[in-house]
Image (cartoon, rainbow, N blue to C red; front, side, top):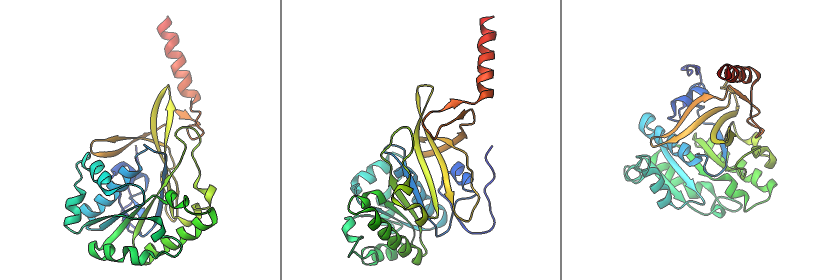
Amino acid sequence: MMNTPSTTGTPRVKTGIPEFDAMLRGGFMKGDAVMLAGSAGTGKTTIALQYLINGIKTAGEGGIYLTFEQHPDQIYRDATSFGWDLQKMEAEDKLRVVFTSPDLLMGEGDPETLLEEPIRAVNARRIVVDSLSHLSMFSKNEDIRQETYRVVNFFKRKEMSTLLIWESPQVLGQSFSISDVGLSFLVDAIVSLKFVEIDSSIHRAIVVLKMRGSDHDKSLREYEITKEGVKVHASFKDYQGIMTGSPTKVAAEKFVELMGKAAKRK
């Protein structure tokens, strides 16, 4: 059973995924910069959209989806499959999908010039950056750290809660660590999404690796992408070694399984 979300203390930014918010003890901390890392197909965009839409529908918080690689038409189409009408939200000045080049945000670029108007237009309190790893294609590791610091500080000055998507190249096995490019210390929370193989079947797993200033669920939990969006389920309590890419059943589970097989033979 998941722990009951916290309702006291620092204001929380709910994702709109009840089980995930329970893992976060009520949601992300307000104003935090969160890294959402995972390989293609793990549902990063779906979670990011749920995060923005929940802010709009339940908290009256305008949102911005800043993308460097996906054309808005593709994002609109993908959102429609879950019943989310992003274009209607844009028409109502609740959301902005901003499709631009990383050059306008990096180096000589100015985040305020690029984003001041859409932030003001929708009174944005949440923003998704898709993706930070795309920025890394245009700069060296030391430069991406500097640019990330500059961009994250801009959003914090605007008192916005930020979700930064990081594209991990691995599909199965050991997850790519964002610490490899020195970004982990720049963000307040890190959530990892990955595929795991168990009993010859592919499952999706989610884990909160870091959450500055707050307790959080530290277990690895299974999740699925449904027609309503992402749903988080129970932890992989019967297995160990999942994060290494070599999951095995825990001793107690193995014993029960062997005893069951023995009983059937008799």
